[in-house]
Length: 116
Image 1 (cartoon, rainbow, N blue to C red):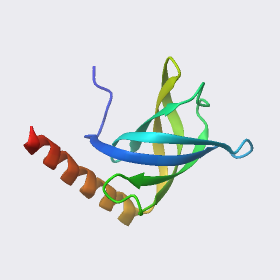
Image 2 (cartoon, rainbow, N blue to C red; image 1 turned 60 degrees about the vertical axis):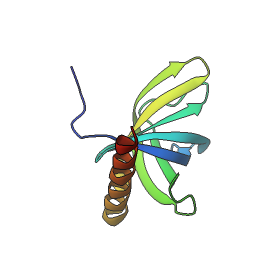
Image 3 (cartoon, rainbow, N blue to C red; image 1 turned 60 degrees about the horizontal axis):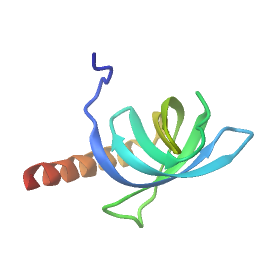
C-alpha cells in the first residue's frame, strides 16, 4: 500500500545537512526526490540519527549556484551496505523557494519523461 500523500519529482542535486541541535553532525548527500512535504536523500554514511532535527542547504543540479535552505526532521531511513537512504519531513521552508523548487522539479520531470 502506497503511503505517500503527494506526488514526488526527481530532484538531482547535492545537499549539505547539519543534524541535531547539540551534535551538529555534518553530512553531504545526494538528493533523490522532492514533494510538497518531504525530500529524500542518499549518502555514504554509517547511520543517520532517528527522528533528529536537520537543517539543509540544497543545490539543485539545474542551478548549482542556487542554495535552497530548509529545516525538517528525519522521518525514515534505510541502510544498504555503507549507503543510507533517508527521508526528511519538511518543517520550515520559504514558500516562494518551495514553489520554485517544485516548479523546477516538475519541469525537469517533464523533460526526462518526454526524452524516453
